[in-house]
Image 1 (cartoon, rainbow, N blue to C red):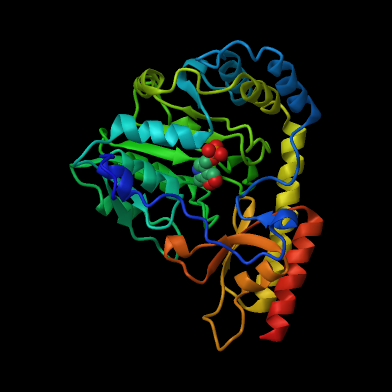
Image 2 (tube, rainbow, N blue to C red):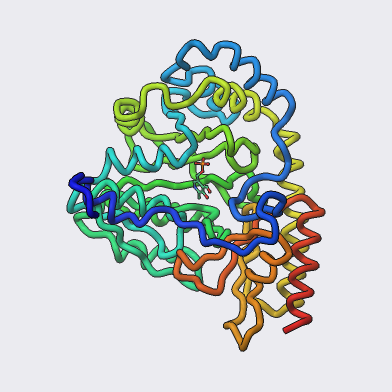
Length: 364
Ligand SMILES: Cc1ncc(COP(=O)(O)O)c(C=O)c1O
């Protein structure tokens, strides 16, 4: 830094959230499958509720998002006083890091997980301890082996991003039981609505008023409200009290909260979203099998695939898709230089990706 300003050195440690550039043919019209957004729009009813709330824009929103918390509590069968809402679940991750971590503390994360945990932990001054995985799957024993008396937080995204890998619920229970009582366990279930595996559970039943586990949820994925930024957590009483103390006072805008409070009850729409995701998942499974590539048939709304090492001047699958004006996520930032994460789009978009991938394989 050349200026005389003196930023918090921890802000410089984070490196930020990087999105690798892609040589798209026409960025303005590109098919964007790089951010795990939902191609199915939110319901008319949810959008109408947001529009109605806009008429009250001269007022600040309710700082406690009371109506939204009540709606979530009713729809999910949870106590409203154990819910805190955020400007996306990402905001809650930053708030949790700020309230639970300080210099000298450690946050343990699986080696390949949602990068915002790392950024939030570093910004809070903590050290990030990266636990090995088992071929990109959660390894509870490896995670537990990383826990020391300096560990304050362990976070597990399930289904995981960027792999889509699903950890069985009994493994999460085993992790929770073995963790020291003073370690906060964050279960990030941003993609919970997509999961169809019998026996999988999102973890809410592990949350108790005086416990050490919380569950994060998002309206950005299955609910299709990524642009409005609404997330929530179901957490022990002490955690809720602290989050309410540190959070920006008016953190959830009224139109965003209003849309969420309607969307949470739209079970039929959520079932359609899940079915569309399953159909796309099956198509990609067949594609990767035909192409002989290692892939994880994700439990969420995206697929993870490992592509071959570059040979000669042949474009990579990432470059080939970019040339076809399709933007997907290249996972170099996670140390997975040859891996891609592709969000499921509309059936037409999926068909275009699959045709482009087959074309790429034919030329190889
Ligand atoms: C695992 C996971 N958690 C949290 C988030 C943040 O979601 P939001 O802030 O949009 O609620 C994402 C977004 O991609 C995610 O993949």
